[in-house]
Image (cartoon, one colour):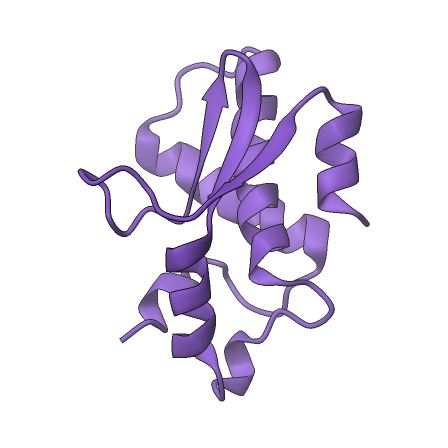
Length: 118
């Protein structure tokens, strides 16, 4: 499974930037709908990778953190184009994490990536 290829097939660009907006310094990725794109922020993703080094339980197998974050944002694209309504922000995030876990076959809940940072 190539997450970037899947995104491209769905008409969603994947871009990388060094850092997130100053108002959101911990933001690692985001989906922007117009035009559809996923933005991966290198600095916080690289910092997370360093923080997770050696925590065996939270290793992403053959997937990198880029793919995990891109898959999460791809869910938000699907949510938008499929017209999913009625989910709270929390419910949408829970669904995105479940989508990532299933799509990539992760052996842990992706929410744990944030917990593993400190």
